[in-house]
Image (cartoon, rainbow, N blue to C red; front, side, top):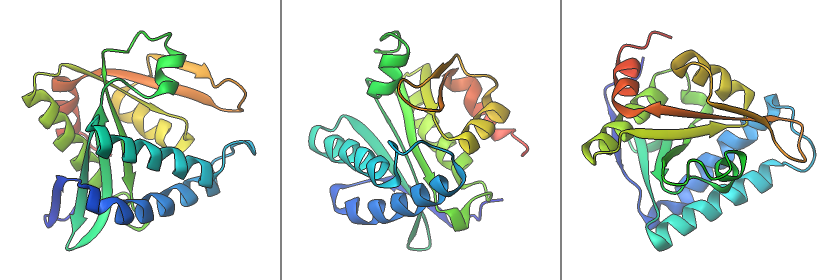
Length: 187
């Protein structure tokens, strides 16, 4: 279970470098267990994520939250609208007006301690306070897909990614019931 000294706050542009270090560590570790084809590499994935982060800081298009244990960054989560281009493409733009929850990354050495669940609850409560009723999120990582299935059931969309050897799963969930589910979740 997560320790109580977890602090969550909104990310700022000055946090970019520490976010990149954490994301690199998480992505490299994930790619060790995932079976992606050669077109998807940790370097490309990190660049894609950093481009999204830079865009969010520049245009304030997404909100990122950082979780710290003591003064060490242990996790991130974000939300924004419209959803990423992969979600839009796979759903034929059906979710273009839906808030996307994403960039949930937990330091590999800190995983399985409840930090991800705490970040999810924090972000969902923030969205609920803003009147958001439904969110979507996606995954191409098999490890994450298994976790999301346990927590949220089967995805609304499960499509083979064009030109790749993996399936792109997309969940659409009710914010309030998801908070309740996460609060009562027993791994």
